[in-house]
Image (cartoon, rainbow, N blue to C red; front, top):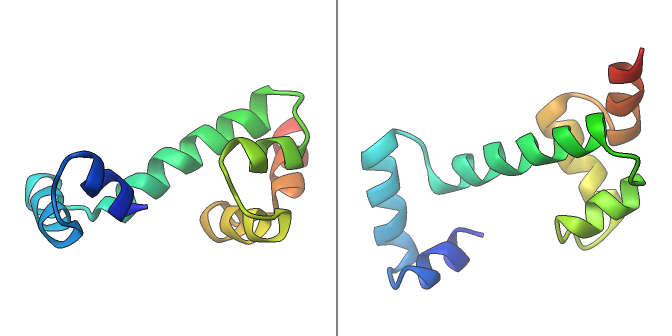
Length: 87
């Protein structure tokens, strides 16, 4: 979360968000999502890990939330994305 990174760097979330937005034109949450999706895509495309193992690796609280997150960002469920990449 944005709060986690702000706290790690000893900033308030509001100040941290403003600094990041001013520096690169994107919000911290956009950057976090881009980074996470990049790693999730890599895992779905290049690993034999189960969908549940990947969700656990990225600390999603449950498989349903992971599926919704992936579908929102990749336009397909994790399994459909993996299957589509294998074709």
